[in-house]
Amino acid sequence: MNNINSISGISSSDLLKQKSGALEATGSDFSQHLKSAINETNELQVNSEKAIADMATGQVKDLHQAALAIGKAETSMKLMLEIRNKALSAYKELGRTQI
Image (cartoon, rainbow, N blue to C red; front, side, top):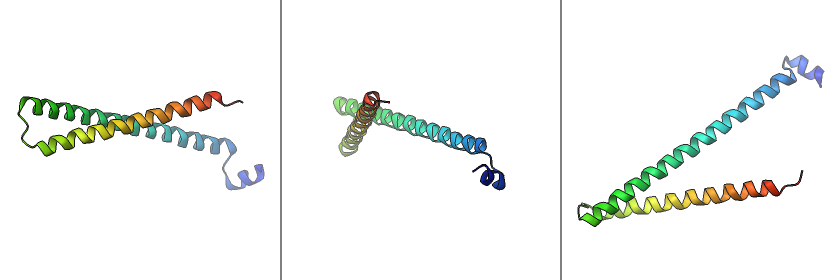
């Protein structure tokens, strides 16, 4: 196997560095996606609360748009809760795994 790597000019340590770099990039990409999803959910919640406050004070101009904002916030929150539940379930399953 060392002959194959030496022929191609790539050492085993170079391959490990490339793989670990790819894993780090994937991990940071996931964390960025998760952060952006959480921020988007937060924005939808804020818009929903504003729409509810506008409806309560009678300042709502378009009831349909307010209902859509509330529906989007509700759906987004349900999705985030399911993601959290799946992550906790996976974490608990890993804890039960015997090594």
